[in-house]
Image 1 (tube, rainbow over the protein chains, first blue to last red):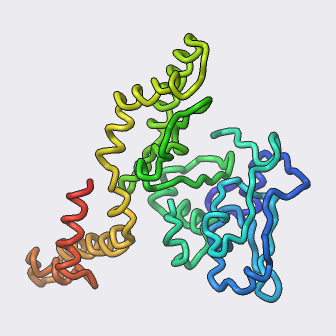
Image 2 (cartoon, helix red, strand yellow):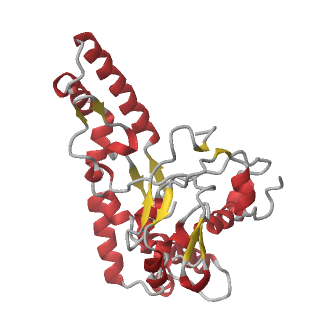
Image 3 (cartoon, chains in turn red, brown):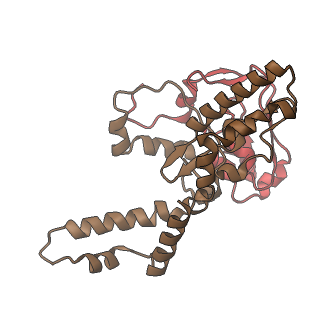
Length: 97
Length: 192
C-alpha cells in the first residue's frame, strides 16, 4: 500500500483485525434529535467515519468499523448515543497496542 | 491530537485531517518507507489529576493509567505512557502485598495510595495540575505559530529595507494585542 497518497478510511480500517458482533453496540436513541441537531459533531469527530449524513437531516451509523474510542458518546450534544463496548471477544482487535 | 471541545470548529473530519497531517512534508519524511499496519484511535481525558476519580483504590479494585487521570499534556507532548507503566507496576506491588495478607479490601490495598505518593507519578501530575487550562487555548497553536513564522521570515528577509527587531515584531503579531501577549505569558509561566 503506497503511503504517498491519502488512503481512504475504508482502506485504513481494512488493515485492522475485527470480529464483528452482529448485534450493534451503538444505538441512536432518538433519530428525531439528530434531525434537529445542526452541529452534528459525530460526523466530524468519529475517527472511523461510522456516522454519515442520512436523508432528511438524519444521521446513519454503522457499528462495524468502530474503533471503540467512545468519542461519539462524549461529543453528542443531545446525549443521544447509547454506547457500550461490544460483547467480550468481539469488536476491533488491536494487535499493536 | 484533537481537543474535542474545539471539535465544532473543524472544517474537515478528523479521519481526513490525520491524512493531511501524515502527508505534511515535515511528517512525511519522518515516516518514509513505513507501512500501515493498523489504524486506531484513542480518547483520553486532558484534565490530568483534576479529572481523577476521588478514590484510586477500594474493596477489590485499583485504578491505574488514564482511567486514574494519569495524563499530562504539556503543549506539543502527550505524556502518560510512563505514568501508566509505573502505576501498573505499583498496582502489581500492592496486589502482591495484599495477596500476602490474604485479603483485597480497601485497607489492604491502601498500600497502593502510599506507593503512588512516593512515586514520580503524583509528583509530576501535582506540579502541572493546571497546565491543561492554559495549554488548551487555540491561540497557542494558531496565532502564536503564525506570529513566530512571520517574525522570523520578515526579520531575516533581505529586501533592501532595514529590519529592526521591535518594529518587525509589531508588524508580525497579526491580530494578537500586546495585552494578549502579556496575559498569556503570565498564565503560561504561572502554570507550566
